[in-house]
Image (tube, rainbow, N blue to C red; front, side, top):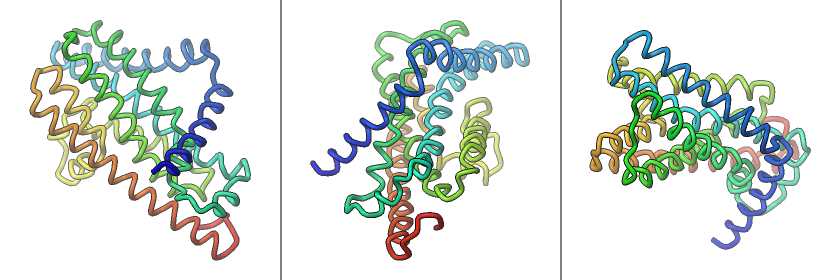
Length: 263
């Protein structure tokens, strides 16, 4: 366990360095955060003009704010492929540690930043559209936002492992999956309105459950919130295990063939 924590910590230090290289506080605040707030406002306004129902506007506002976390965490797909450009995959193939922990720490800047972005969005954009958070609900809401970021991040790690040899597809996959989750996970349309096969896919994705939990917290339904949070946690762990399998398969094959340019 201590060895694993050291691996994650060293990789996370690399993630922090990447974050400092990508953003100054001004660029993050006025660029990234401003973009996410504008997106949440756009979809909430769109819903209000289309339906005119306060409850539907609130539904869209909550979903759009939480979606900020999902979008940012999908950046793990791109940042994982940076290892190939940096020429470090060969070194990873030679170390005895499980590769998933290296990659898990490698992009931890995304769930960290995503959690902050979404908390700010919930407490600034939400009240503009009638979403009233009570002080007693704040700890549960913040915990669910962090859970959304981490569980979605684990799902993104699996996708990153799958496209590790398709560097040109990283942005396509990240944007396509983010858009799909926005459509089917209950951000704008209740999951129950989709055909069965779409609902099955949606229920396998962590944001579906964390969004359900957030709305349950808003409605003071602790039982539903706890059950949905448990489902999201189990899915996050399951996707992380799947990512571990894929990364291990990749590096085991690399060790046998002496190459990291194919899977």
